[in-house]
Amino acid sequence: MRSEKIKKFIDDRGNLFWYSPSPKSEKVSDDLLVKTILNYGSIDDVKELFSVMGINNVSKIFFDTINKSERRKNNYHELTVNYFTLYFNRYAS
Image: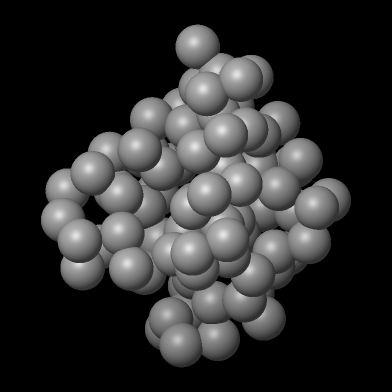
Protein backbone atom coordinates (compact mmCIF):
# COMPACT_ATOMS: atom_id res chain seq x y z
CA MET A 1 0.00 0.00 0.00
CA ARG A 2 1.31 3.44 -0.91
CA SER A 3 1.76 6.21 1.58
CA GLU A 4 -0.37 9.31 1.19
CA LYS A 5 2.78 11.39 0.59
CA ILE A 6 3.72 9.29 -2.45
CA LYS A 7 0.16 9.35 -3.78
CA LYS A 8 0.07 13.15 -3.49
CA PHE A 9 3.52 13.41 -5.09
CA ILE A 10 2.34 11.38 -8.12
CA ASP A 11 -0.98 13.21 -8.39
CA ASP A 12 0.78 16.61 -8.26
CA ARG A 13 2.95 15.53 -11.21
CA GLY A 14 0.20 13.88 -13.24
CA ASN A 15 1.39 15.62 -16.40
CA LEU A 16 4.55 13.44 -16.31
CA PHE A 17 2.36 10.32 -16.24
CA TRP A 18 -0.08 11.37 -18.98
CA TYR A 19 -0.02 7.86 -20.51
CA SER A 20 -1.17 6.20 -17.29
CA PRO A 21 -4.90 5.85 -16.61
CA SER A 22 -6.44 7.48 -13.56
CA PRO A 23 -6.06 7.18 -10.66
CA LYS A 24 -2.39 7.57 -11.45
CA SER A 25 -1.16 7.13 -7.88
CA GLU A 26 -2.42 3.53 -7.86
CA LYS A 27 -1.20 2.56 -11.35
CA VAL A 28 2.38 3.90 -11.29
CA SER A 29 4.94 1.39 -9.97
CA ASP A 30 7.94 2.48 -7.92
CA ASP A 31 10.24 1.60 -10.86
CA LEU A 32 8.22 3.77 -13.22
CA LEU A 33 7.99 6.59 -10.69
CA VAL A 34 11.75 6.72 -10.16
CA LYS A 35 12.52 6.39 -13.88
CA THR A 36 10.09 9.14 -14.86
CA ILE A 37 11.20 11.62 -12.21
CA LEU A 38 14.92 11.07 -12.78
CA ASN A 39 14.51 11.30 -16.57
CA TYR A 40 11.93 14.06 -16.92
CA GLY A 41 11.38 15.75 -13.56
CA SER A 42 12.84 19.03 -12.43
CA ILE A 43 15.52 19.22 -9.75
CA ASP A 44 12.77 20.14 -7.27
CA ASP A 45 10.88 16.99 -8.28
CA VAL A 46 14.01 14.91 -7.66
CA LYS A 47 14.56 16.51 -4.24
CA GLU A 48 10.95 15.87 -3.25
CA LEU A 49 11.19 12.27 -4.51
CA PHE A 50 14.19 11.78 -2.20
CA SER A 51 12.16 13.32 0.60
CA VAL A 52 9.07 11.12 0.20
CA MET A 53 10.79 7.84 -0.73
CA GLY A 54 14.23 8.27 0.81
CA ILE A 55 17.45 8.60 -1.15
CA ASN A 56 18.57 5.06 -0.26
CA ASN A 57 15.30 3.56 -1.49
CA VAL A 58 15.44 5.56 -4.74
CA SER A 59 19.07 4.50 -5.19
CA LYS A 60 18.18 0.83 -4.69
CA ILE A 61 15.32 1.01 -7.21
CA PHE A 62 17.55 2.84 -9.71
CA PHE A 63 20.42 0.33 -9.49
CA ASP A 64 18.08 -2.70 -9.46
CA THR A 65 16.42 -1.40 -12.62
CA ILE A 66 19.56 -0.62 -14.61
CA ASN A 67 21.23 -3.87 -13.57
CA LYS A 68 18.33 -6.14 -14.62
CA SER A 69 18.93 -5.95 -18.34
CA GLU A 70 20.39 -3.75 -21.03
CA ARG A 71 16.88 -3.04 -22.31
CA ARG A 72 15.73 -1.71 -18.94
CA LYS A 73 18.92 0.30 -18.58
CA ASN A 74 18.11 1.92 -21.90
CA ASN A 75 14.82 3.20 -20.46
CA TYR A 76 16.97 5.88 -18.80
CA HIS A 77 18.72 8.62 -20.75
CA GLU A 78 22.46 8.00 -20.99
CA LEU A 79 23.28 11.21 -19.12
CA THR A 80 20.75 10.34 -16.41
CA VAL A 81 22.40 6.95 -15.83
CA ASN A 82 25.84 8.53 -15.65
CA TYR A 83 24.83 11.40 -13.36
CA PHE A 84 22.75 9.39 -10.89
CA THR A 85 25.25 6.52 -10.78
CA LEU A 86 27.88 9.01 -9.63
CA TYR A 87 25.41 10.81 -7.35
CA PHE A 88 24.11 7.70 -5.60
CA ASN A 89 27.59 6.21 -5.23
CA ARG A 90 28.58 9.35 -3.37
CA TYR A 91 25.48 10.22 -1.33
CA ALA A 92 23.49 7.02 -0.82
CA SER A 93 24.59 4.13 1.33
